[in-house]
Figure 1: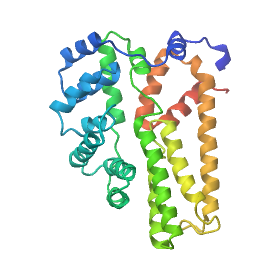
Figure 2 (figure 1 turned 90 degrees about the horizontal axis):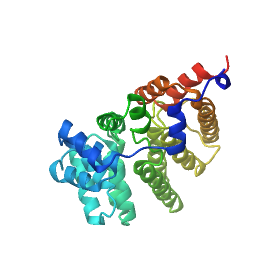
Figure 3 (figure 1 turned 60 degrees about the vertical axis):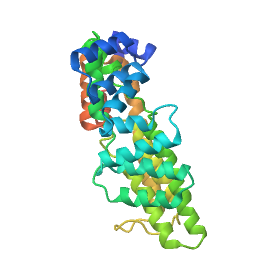
Amino acid sequence: MAEDLPVTNLTDRYLKSGPAKLTREQAEAYLKSNGRNAATLLAAFRASDDTALLEEAMEKFPNDPRVDLAAIFKSGSSPEEQRQWLSAFERSAPDNALANYLSALNYFKAGQSEQAVQELSAASGKPQFQGYARESAQSDVEAFLAAGYSVGDAKVFGPTINPQTPINSALRELGQDMLGLATGYQQSGDQASAQTAFQMTVNLGRTLDAPDGATAVGRLVGMNIERTAFNAMDPAGPYGAAGQTVQDRIDQLAQQRTALMELGNQFGSVAPMMSEQDWINYRDRQWAFGQAAAQQWVISKYGPR
């Protein structure tokens, strides 16, 4: 039983201190050993919060989509600079719908709804949605290992798995703008455009709520976007090909959200009992199969028999 097992030092340190950061000297030592390419510069920036490293990556690798994405969220950028990097991201990752979604948000903020709709339409036809989180986590681990952290500490403290990522926050805001667009069409009597906009909002939510999502928070953001779209529709209206109604889908989302929250609570109750090796395995499973699957693995091992 979980309550019979000792609390590991690794868990205790994580709960007390949270994510760690490298010093500038440690970041530079990592770069000296691994070279100054796009991936390593971004890892060193994330690990140390040294903006100069991000700026170096922006100067040397302006055509790398990972750099373009990081540059979009650089603190202190002017609207013109942000638009420049949004355009660069669209060029460097032409199949990545995330580039169009972020561009649409930027146009909404600028009051350019027509351009935003064009970006949303482009996003709907893209085969990928990629924020590069999984490969970034591996680079983060390597940066902490180079700084002398153990494998366990590097896996737990190293990857910057921050649930309130700028991408999640941006897409949450975009979902609100898309809902406003849909209701505007609805109020003006343009039902066809309203239905299209509602469906694009739902599609964004479902994209974020992928079962193998790396973080539960990202999935919850997606569920919320989808739910708010359905809340604006006629609850008795048909939805889907299986005879469902809009209200049926709303109820399903509520059940899924409750289940995901309960899973997180169960994981939190047994996480202090995890061994260092199981923390390592948990992180590996999280990035390979998604956070929900990784949490279920831990619960099955440490929960009541």
